[in-house]
Length: 127
Picture 1 (cartoon, rainbow, N blue to C red):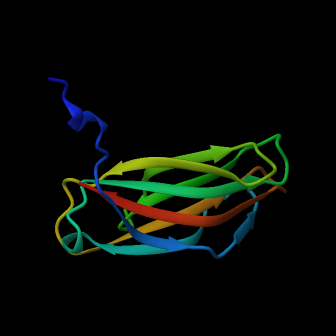
Picture 2 (cartoon, helix red, strand yellow; picture 1 turned 45 degrees about the horizontal axis):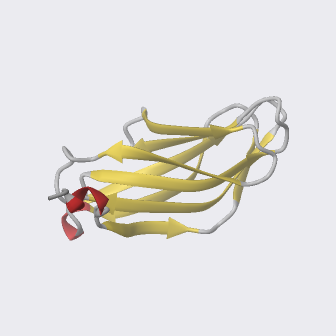
């Protein structure tokens, strides 16, 4: 008999969302958003980050860096050279995080004299 469990997606829960549009000018990573989640509220092992991102000049990519709990290092980097909003997503392994409150920080950068814009931002947790 076939194993039908392979067709059943893991349960995903929305942990955070924000629709505020934020833009930066230049190539210095600048924090534009932060979102918190409580790990014990949902025992997530993996976070999926989904964003709308664009640049005003396709020469250099708009880059969104996601950092966890003020670590100063990137947990996820998403980028595009699209001049219209494009949906990008990636995952972060959080299986080793302790129970409690955690914060995701979103940093934007683009080429010197160019603008990166971040719009819709979603965070999903999955066991």
